[in-house]
Image 1 (tube, rainbow, N blue to C red):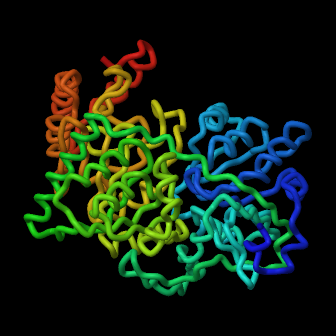
Image 2 (tube, helix red, strand yellow):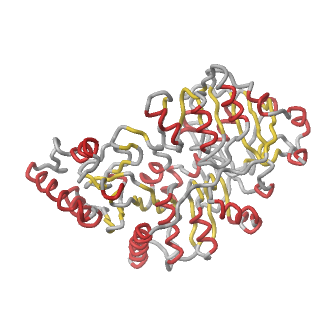
Image 3 (cartoon, helix red, strand yellow):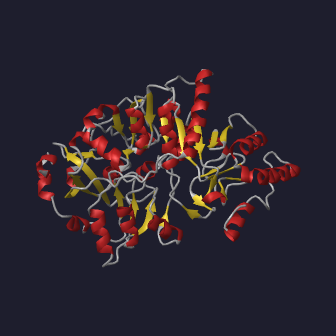
Length: 495
């Protein structure tokens, strides 16, 4: 019975269907929705709004934690319900509309959205749309499988709509650690020394007067579509394991390593999963998203604790986790993304950050977001938060794509998300380049030697040798620096 999930009696009078709740959302409003990488997104009111947008003119500015499911993000985009979107998305139909200019997308470091909202840069939030597992006796919100930006949306919104999702286990109550920093200046330090500590509350505070609707749903999160590790990602994982073993031997890090962060997606997940076969023990994960690899490491006895802002799993691991959640709940904590991604905490804890590059260049600059420099893929997400501040900043990518038609290592990246100053380690299946402390010319030599695919290595050396003749601290042949991308556009291959 849903009434057992609503322990604050006055809210029972506000229960209504999704269509009626969606009527609170008007054309031109700013709506802040829960959800982070398919997890914890509002699944009923958003789809009711999409249906309404097919019949009448309504466009909203839609802020979230990160990407929502294809059904929600895609449904709103395809219905023409969105004028603006931030800070991250990963749905093909929305991506197409962004690249056509029909949806205006703000790509943003995920630790910064809260700050912009708190300082009034983003405009007032009209509606906070939140998925919850339970309402407390005080009317406060227990989130489901993500926290994301939900606390700041609830805090700042004029009105709040809550979806109670009966599909999620009530055992989620107690897993969250909700803490919002104060406004600047004069802000106190965030008093977390390890990911296992708690400094907040297990609920999101909300003024009950702002809650205008409660909607009852019964639908699990859409599972992730992560592919299993392949031979190349296994090789990359081995490169990183050997590197970390040497770091341990040199006394730079303990055998339990430093807390681990892994970016979202197949490659980063597969590389992290490779640690199952490593000698490292008592690992701690401090990431944005907990993917399958983290629970494979739990199962192998390698990880003892994991903190993040959401959990997004394959169908098999979703079933395994939530059918046995009592075995994991004391080993997990979910925080607002402002905290999971906070530069102060990342630097203090000395995280090992493993993120994915679309392409990298011979000096270590990384493009994570734009295909051929112009077309948005998903967004920078939290990779910049971690890369700039981590104890070890590692970027991984396969050396080639599209059966060799594209080299992922290029003379100059077509778009820069992470400068050479934030990229310490670059890894492909060809090898690992430790770039720490190297001058640009040393970096170029090492990346060409260690990371470039053999079918492109001679071509890259030819470019670099010509660049050396031009001279400079960071040698380039400017008229040829993007010639590989130009050739790809004209002929369909960089070869």
